[in-house]
Structures are given as C-alpha cells and as structure tokens.
Image (cartoon, rainbow, N blue to C red; front, top):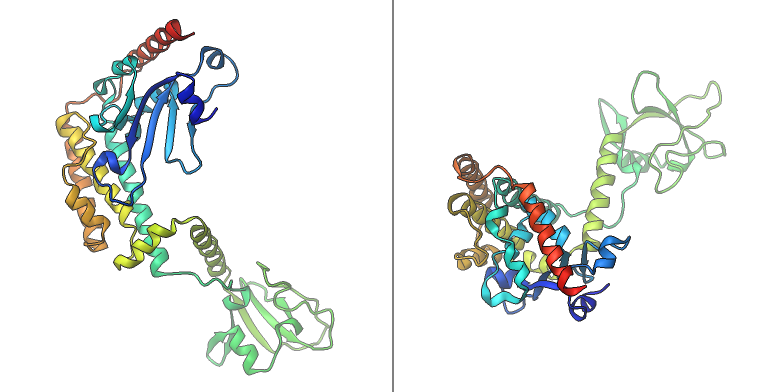
Length: 354
C-alpha cells in the first residue's frame, strides 16, 4: 500500500502539514512535511496484512494506521500529540471521527519524559555533531602499527619512527610474547627468515602477529601494542565515516557556515520541545505554533554559542522537573478509556465504509 492508495481508497481520517511549517519556524527553503492517520480496510485489519504506517522514502510524509496512532498517543509521543492540536491553516483533511480524539484524554505526566526526553536526544545529537566537526577522522585508516611503541633509552618512540631510524621493515620482524606483560613483545629481525610473520599480517589486521623464533636468537628490541587505543580508534573511525555517508550535506554546510560547530537545527528542536513540555505542565495543553519564532530562528542561524545553549537547556530541564511534580495531570492516560474510544472509532468507521 502506498500514500496514493490511501488517498484514493477513502480510508483517511486526518491529514495535515507538519514540521517547521506547522511550528512557524519554516524558511523559504523548508520542505513541506505531511502527517496523517488512516483506517485499514476491515479485511486487512482482521487478516494477516496489518500495516502500522506508510511513508515515503525520506519520511517527509508519514501516515499512521489508527491503531498504531492511538497506541503512540497513549505513550504521549510528541509527534502524535501534535496532530491533535494542529493549527487550522495546516489541516488538509479531518474526518468527523477524528474529532473524538481529544488531547485531554491523552496528555499526562508522561510528557515530561517524552517531550523533555526527546529534547535531550536532540542535545546528544548536537553534541555528537560538535565532536565530529571539531575532531574529524582522516579518510586514510590507521593500522595497528600506529598504536605500537618501541622502547628507546629510558622512554619510548612510535614504532614506525623506530623502524625507520633502524632501517627495518615490519614484515621481516618476528614477535614473541613476554610473559606477565600484557601486549608487550620481544622483537626479532631476520630478512631471510620466511617464517617470520611480521608485526601485522595484513593492513586491516586487528591483532599483532606472533612468530616462531629459532632458539638462541636475540631480540633487537621490545614493543608494546596499545590495543585499547586501537579499538577506540576503530570505533570512532567507523562511526565518523558512517555519519559522513548518511549526513544531510545541506544541513552540514549550514552548520559549518555559521561557525558554531553544532547542528543548529537539532538545537532549535531541543528548545521547541522543552518549551512545549513546560507549557503542557503549566497549561495542560499542546501549542504547536511556536510564539517565539524569532528566538528559535536565531538558534538555527547560529547566533548563540554552543555552551550557552547547553546551559540554558539544562536550566530548563531542571525547571520542567519541578513543574511536573506539581502539575495537575494524570500520571498516564487511562488505557481502558483509550481502548473503548479506539474500538468505537473503528466500529463506526467499518459500519459506514465496509
């Protein structure tokens, strides 16, 4: 089933413009996202073809089956709750049955975790991007040789430097464990000994190679392998280049151009969500259209320092914790009432459309 099938099959309950255009933080270049709710035809619902949601390739347009939608509402999912309070100028279609889904049935103290928790995830994303921008990882991957060190005098030197200074090639080296010394090895050298396996067998080796050494042969040195450092590097390398592959280049260039080294759009959403969490605690309702558009757009344009934003966000989170302790909200939605309502909506729909 596709989005086109939804619209041609007369199974939509709700459709609206969402995202920045609903929040009022859109720019001339902003995409137009859509969110919606549909009811599966009766035969599919009772059969083995249940479809919880349908979206396009970029997830700009996402439509939820009524069962999945109500399930997420009961968990106080921010994106779902927003659909119950969309500004009139964003609503493209609303079935009379959708009117039965009142925000007050769902809004609860769970919003502290969902809205503020989601905001925290945005902070973590911004932190992660800050780290990646400030500490980029070279495309040329390091080998275990970069994490080995040779004893020299009273200290140590990088292995590659030691090999070069002594006109040695790593492939002619043979390593032997030194008992009771973790990741420390005696180095033997013989250009003619074909049995020596070198320090690393392959460019992408994750362990040093050990060799059989003739009895009586004397080592030319001692090296250590910083295995923990190498593991950390491999993890950072993998995560960085996976991020490069998947990143939104337009957003990245905007981040670089504002010179603040954080994902400004993530930070905008951090404060939007924190503001909404506070409003829910105080007012008991959801305000989708943001009254502080100018401030949020200043965040997006990189007018504030990262550390200042982080401090303000932490202060807001502390305030929200106190507000929710005092808020006149249920701990969580009444699942019994939610189930009754879902059954009513589905039964009424099927009685008229199947």
